[in-house]
Every structure is written in structure tokens, then in C-alpha cells.
Figure 1 (tube, rainbow, N blue to C red):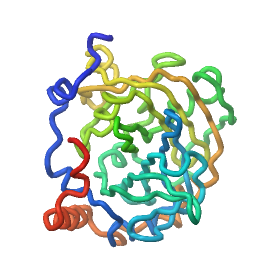
Figure 2 (cartoon, helix red, strand yellow):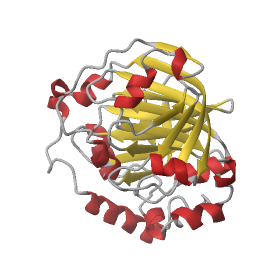
Figure 3 (cartoon, rainbow, N blue to C red):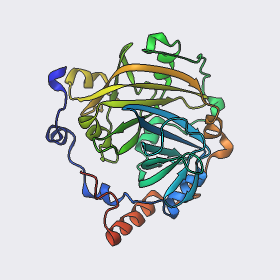
Figure 4 (cartoon, helix red, strand yellow):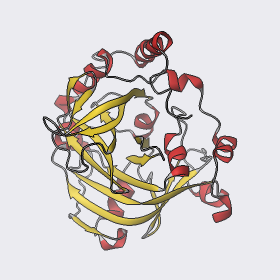
Length: 319
């Protein structure tokens, strides 16, 4: 399989395509009114932090926007001031997610010093069926908390992965810019090839391909897997690479869709833990009505206009 590992940007773009310029224009350098309204409705975010050369990822309840350049995360337990951090925010019942990247600040409590914000397309949420059922309609997940070096060392880890339709991948590039990318598919999105190797297929989405570009520069990765209705999460950490291996990709087919690439994770740490903050995410009372938030097309148009007026917010990042 090593001969099929993607090792350069040229190989990556030959396989999955280059980043369309429009994806850059949809990214802004602060939290505008759209972002602030979205985050005000979000009861739960997933944050990935890079400290001492290692990736960590966690769910956090009750985020709060304190200013256009600051997102408060009172439950953040990883990282120190200045460490890179990426965040993806979920709103119950809403397809799109908001992604926020920046650096950790600790004055006045843990927060993100915002450097980049953008709306992620709804395809991953749609494919996962995240909001299709109410929590009571799901089969309960019976697992116990624990940690270990691989899946078999943590009872219930394999079951949670098999039931999970939604994960978030935390990576960072060589410059220290962090990112959290949401992924969705029917249950079993992440395949355990063995106790210490995971495969994650790529599906069409916003075409930013941040995760792949980051892994070409730094292999550290952290993954957080959710199961709708369950108040437990699975954090997996390790080192990853992007592969075009045809046999593996054929094993990851969904509805005749064979992924162009997959992320292979060599697992170094597994932790299954309780996360009470998820209760609000799955609550029927927290779900928004279809017209309670602006349409994605409007948000993208407004964000693009900001960049056409002031220049791309992330022009310093190399695409």
C-alpha cells in the first residue's frame, strides 16, 4: 500500500483536483454577523488543539462569541496560550457547520483568537443523517469509558466506531495553522482495518482538502467520533497519510461511490469518555426551524463580497 501513498501536492491535486478559488473567497478573517448568529445557536463545538507536537480533540459545550476576533470556549482543557486551534460548530437541525481557526488565548478564560472563519457545506451532515431521528428513536449505545493504545484495549471502542456516522479530523500544517474537518457517511464511516489502523474515505464536499494538504506536511492527527443520541465520544490520536490504494478504496464504497482517496491512521492512543455537553446537541428542543438561520447561499455570498472588497482573509496561507 505504501506505493499508493500520496506524497506531494502535485500527486494530491492530480487525484482529487485543485482547490477552486471560490473556496478561498468564502473564508473571512473574523466572526461577522452570520458567524455570530450561528455560534449563538450552537450548544456544542469540536475543538482540536496542537500542543508539544501532539494533536488532541474534544467536544465543548456553551461556546460564546465575545468579539469579532474572539470565541470563548470555557470547557477547553487542552493547549496553552499561542497553540494552534481549530473548531467546528454544530447547530441541531441545521445542515451547515461553521469552522473557526486561530490560536489559543487564555486571558479572561480559554478562547480562540480568530484568524479564519467560514461556512462548511452541508454534505457531510446530510450523508450522516445526523438530525434525521430524535434521540429516543436511536438504539442506546452501551459502552464503558476507558483509554488505551489501540481499539482492542478499550472495550466498546469498536462498537462506537461501527455506530458512528459523523467524525471530526484535527490536523495542522507546517506553519502551525490548525483545522478541524467534519466527515459524514452512514454508520461505520471509519473502518477499523485492525486494532491499530483506521481508514476514512473522502467524499465530495467543499473541496478545500485542508486535511490532505496538512497531512502532507505533518502526519499528526486527532479524530473525534459521535453517535447521535449518545453522550459519549471516542477520541483517537495517531499519525496519518493519504492513500490512493485501489483495493482499500473499493472496500469503502457507499452507494456505488468509490472515494478517490482515503486517510489511513496509525493509532497511538484511544479514549472513550463521557461527554454530558452532548445532551443539548441531541435535544429536540434545541433544533432550529428551517427558516431560523440564513440560507447557506446568502452567507457564502456575503462572505465572498467581504473578500472582494477587502481581499482574501487567508491570503497568507499557501494554497
